[in-house]
Image 1: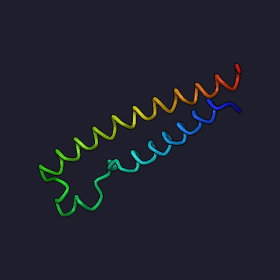
Image 2: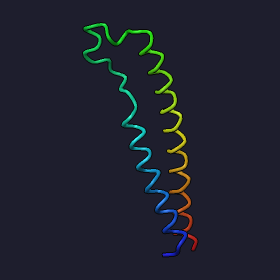
Image 3: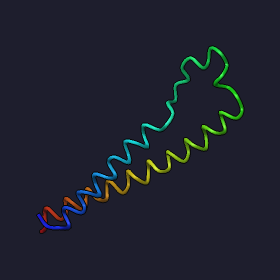
Image 4: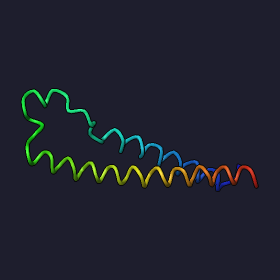
Length: 81
């Protein structure tokens, strides 16, 4: 294995961990027990959740795109070199 394969493998590992962390940080779409007490319906919690969820969703897409590009690059290197 060449040095480039090791570097891309390390990048792939970092982005796979980043995808896992970003997905775990996202709120679930289920409201759970907050619906019973009405605590989930406050104005400030809705706006905060939207901005954080939008931020995390955007970074999930970015990390996933880079992950796919690195995987395709590794496969191309393995096949042609």
